[in-house]
Amino acid sequence: LIDITVSRMPNSEGDDWTIMLGMEGWLPARSEFMLNARGVNGQDLMLTLQGLTVGEATNLGIDSEFTIRETSGGINEVTTSTRFVLSNRLDWIHAELINRDAGARTEMLINDIPESIDLQASLGTSISIDMIVPEKHRRDGPAVDSIMLQQMQWMEEAWWPATMFLTQVPGSMNLTTEPDLDFDITKNLAFQGLPILDFSASSEGMSLYIEAQGRAINSKGDVVLMAEGLSDRLSIKPTDTYGLNIRSGGDGVERLYFRSTNIPTMPPVVLDEMEALG
Image (cartoon, rainbow, N blue to C red; front, side, top):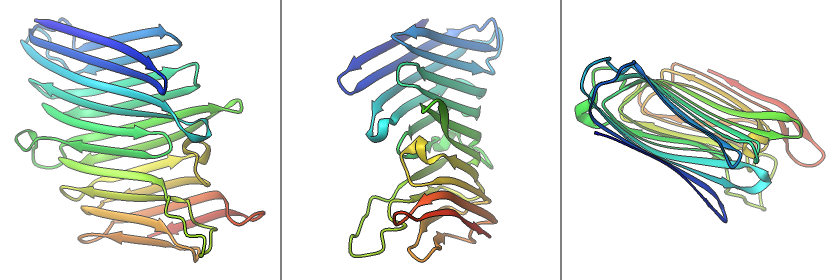
């Protein structure tokens, strides 16, 4: 039994893509499954699954929704809510959404997929990801090998990327990086509105890399963050004294590097670079 539904619903705020895929007792002829929808009102949607066992009865269920909205500064925000239910683990899943009219490209790659996974992610003015693997499908060590998310915005004849890599991902995790919207006009405005990061997980050991051009997320400055051997909790926020407020649970972070560049502070001052290493 095979049931495949792909739909695109335009509305006044943007577009909604829905992918529903159900296969029961399916015998794959190849290890790879591809689903492509190209040229749909200037948009392309591609989904690839790798790691199917050829000739073996396979159950596969995918329920995925991609929501596209245009936010302030002409930034396209793409939000996805996806559930995978599989009869066996997969090598990787790759999804790509291209909006030629809006000049936006969104990409997601997940390596070593467990039998069930719930994933919610948002790319645009903020970068966030929330992932849960049910307890019965978790194993010793990381639940997922790695996750990559990227959003690229085309503005002023150039691509402006925002990229996130996660490795050794635990069974449950939540990560958000977004501009701080808590403004106080009675205090120094120089560092208000800079990106902040908040992370929590079911266990320690994950590593991450985040790089975002300010134009890609409509934020002050460009940001690079690398962290290795995270604990189950991490919070990073710039202070108004040219420093960083870093809070971590457990034994802390093994290695951490943060750099923010081209930061407009108090007009006409622009901070070239702020860097932290630990």
